[in-house]
Length: 144
Image (cartoon, rainbow, N blue to C red):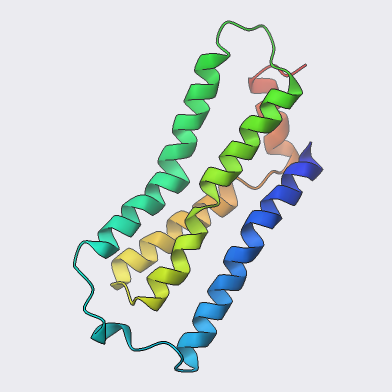
């Protein structure tokens, strides 16, 4: 189970990392116009920041509470159900790193850009499927 989750984790994270490298390279080589001349509406940066927080923190908390609520009367949870739950968590949380390249290319204010990066780093760190974390989840949900 841990090996499968790690494979999914890296399959979701690798494209985000590649996009970040491409965005940085494109901006450094001058392939992307200067973001200060774009004149973005003022609500774009805060909206993307809120989306980042929602994807990396709020949605995983909601999914966890929903899973626990659905399983509250069961004595144990099948491993396949826990695996599906962990997949959903990974898909939700690892969506936030994909918000970094557009934030960088559009030249978001430093506060919003830094907050988006921090929430993405939180998601990448916290939802890494380590054997210790998966064992904790198995014990918490009483997996057969």
